[in-house]
Image (cartoon, rainbow, N blue to C red; front, side):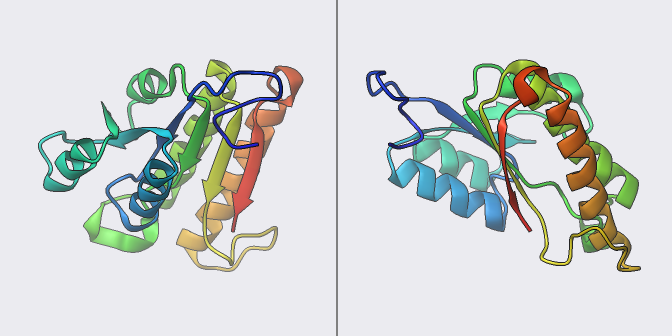
Length: 168
């Protein structure tokens, strides 16, 4: 059974929202989902961006938003069956201007809103050093904290929220 069907249900497409859609991980996920003929909604900051336009021309629906704007995340997530979650990394320093605290807040917001909006499947991707022990590297530890707070948010939801896959 594929992501686009449930037992006893016709082959109705379900939408997968992809964060980081114009980045390395998210971009590969968008391509793979589109290749599998799935409906993809790509979360982008700027619909005029060259990479965003390329996604749209390959069949992805664009959802314009900002990771710091929960309302834009909520709008993008509305009606989505699944979510692929990758946040801007605080380890990339000046490239994104994201702090460890912001990275954790973004991951938690995605998990909270996924549970709130009825998302059925959430994939959170991180780094292989993300675990229960602190590493002393802020941008690794922020991913561990985001994973921990996301799990709390999801399991506080009715029926323990969406099914979660951790890619760490």
